[in-house]
Amino acid sequence: MDHFAIREGRMFAEDVPMAHIAEKVGTPVYVYSRATLERHARVFRDALSALPSIHIAFAIKANPNLAVLRVLAREGFGGDIVSIGEMKRALAAGMKAADIVFSGVGKTRGDLRDALDAGVGQFNIELEEEGVALAEIAKSMGKTATAVLRVNPDVDAGTHAKISTGKSENKFGVPIDQAPDMFGRLAALDGLAMRGLALHIGSQIFDLDPIERAYVKVGALAMQLRGAGFVIDRVDLGGGLGVPYERGKVPPSPAIYGEMVARVTKGWDVTLMFEPGRVIAGNAGVLLTRVIWVKPGIVRPYVIVDAAMNDLARPAMYDAWHDFEAVLPSGERVVANIAGPVCESGDTFAMNREIDAVKSGDLAVFRTAGAYGATMASTYNSRALVPEVMVDGDKFAIVAERVVPEKLIAAEQVPDFLKD
Ligand code: LLP
View (tube, rainbow, N blue to C red):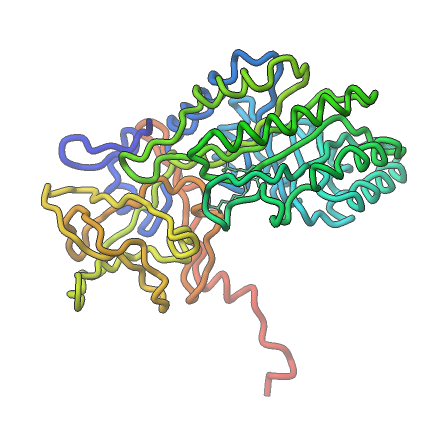
């Protein structure tokens, strides 16, 4: 459930008319709803309430905006980070270093040092050499790094190839059959406290079966390691729960996921860690855009909007679907293509789609844009970096300003050797 709805013929974000935001901030602009974020955080937490011990770390890559992170920090969430930049954001938003989990396949030695220095709570090790480096660095700093080993369970999550991470050919995790010996070697190192395992098999998952199979495999490995005398007190189950991008296509609810987790992990006697991203932020945001032209196409009309692939990359990158809705719907529907102004044919949000009829100057939104939206934006075609707004009841605030070309140009220089 979200708080973007048509009331009295026009779309609101909570109690703020969308048109009001467009007028004050301009378009394109991402609009987040605080109440929706809070609701999603609570629904997710409640779904796991039957579990004896949990830790939830929001996958910051999904939406690293400081205001968004602040809302989630207030809900008691930690952060799952994949860079020192994300760590800085998590800390700036008020998340505790101890509640931060450092994931990622390419952490540099410098990253490991910075994270240790800040007191990051857990390192998810992706390969043996990384664990050895972490141990050395921690020891040299007089510290002990708390770590888990990320395993690749070789399970197909059944999602888009570009967001699948748990198959043997993917770059993530260590092969599960090599994990027991590797865990033993890492656990023997000074400077490293190996405490458990981690996995994450993919994103936008609609079928719980592969997740369950992967959890069963990792649970068996955890019990095997404990049986061999290792301390295993945490298992990080990753993120990946899907969201409804398209009306009528409904993913498993957090409650159903929670029931599965409770059943599968019964008796593990560990703290279960979660790294949800999309399921928390996805439907808490929309991308508000204005129609520039409706261009009669050869086959279908093209609705050309002022948002483009640089603002919302998902359709161009993954053929992703985002519902498109008029802010002032007339009730009339048409079949059209929707595209942005960027000079690439791939800058297309939808083809042959039945949508609300819109005309030049109308406002519309792309829904479910709160996760992997603004965070993946670029300035391609020298377009401004898209701004972000958060709504709270009848108030709203700009939470990331539009970075205009003048600012981007100011960060560049023509070198002396080109100055005549
Ligand atoms: N944990 C790890 C280790 C991950 O790699 C990811 C996502 C998550 C948690 C959060 O997954 P979520 O709950 O959000 O599905 N840009 C793509 C998604 C990339 C996801 C990468 N990893 C998209 O727009 O669909």
